[in-house]
Structures are given as C-alpha cells and as structure tokens.
Length: 175
Image 1 (cartoon, rainbow, N blue to C red):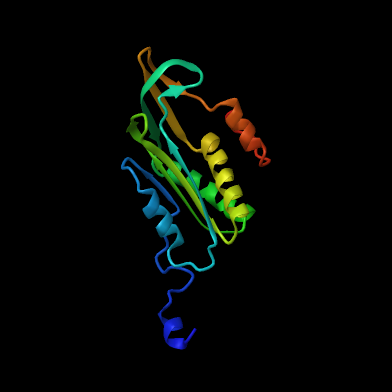
Image 2 (cartoon, rainbow, N blue to C red):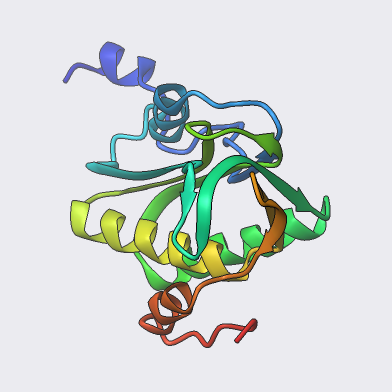
C-alpha cells in the first residue's frame, strides 16, 4: 500500500469511542449499532451479536403476555453493566463491546436488548457475547413487570439463568 493511501486510513482506535452501555426507551437499529462497533477497526475479524425481543408468553405463567415494563435506577444500572463489560474485557481478548437495553413499556415483538462484541476471531466473540448476556440476565439491576389477562406480576430470574451464570464461575447474587 502506498503512503498516500496509508495516511488516509483512520487509526485503529477512534478518537470518540462509542459508549459501551446505553439504557434507553427508544428502539435501536441493529445494523447501525454493529457498524458503529466495527467503525474502521481493521483488527476486528468477528462480530457476534445477541438481539433479545419481548415474547408474548412466559414459561411459568398461563396466558399471553400483553406488555412488559422494565424499570431501573439511572446511573446505578449503567455502572453495573459497565462493570460487566470490564469483566468481559478482562476475561476475553475482545476489541469492543456494546450493550443497549431498553426500559419503559414494551410490547411483544419489540426489541429489548442488544449485546454485541467484536474481536479478531469468532470463538472469542461468541464466548464474550454469551458471557455478557448470561451476566446481564441475572445481575443487571432491572425490574420486569409482565401484563397478562390475569393481571400484572413482577418477573424473577429463572434457575436456568442462574445456572448459565455459574458456568462462568460466578454465583448469582439473587439465589
């Protein structure tokens, strides 16, 4: 590559990095989020993402879920998720990570969470993404309330979510 082309390339590290964590009521664009995560970083050979959506059924509740409402404590939730992302960087050789989680009222089929991880290789990206999602599912300070025809109820973490976290050597704090 000649020097003129090389000098026009953006550096590996962006001057203004994408925030790693966003808690928001607004929907998000999966493609835009992944593009921003990759943003001209030639070290990245793999991006793994998980997109969670609101289901119309809960395995432990009879009847359809008509709505889901998520609450959080601003500031506390972001700090807790940032600590999760720090832990992923400590455990895995990743170059970037992004967690977007929606709060407020949501309907079935709405996007609720995005976890995206970028690394040089796919195996690491898959592992780090799964780690973050397992951690997020049980340890992030969110409170979920489902609405059904039978009324509203608060949703607890499931035993299977706690078991998924235990694979990583982390005991669930809500057990």
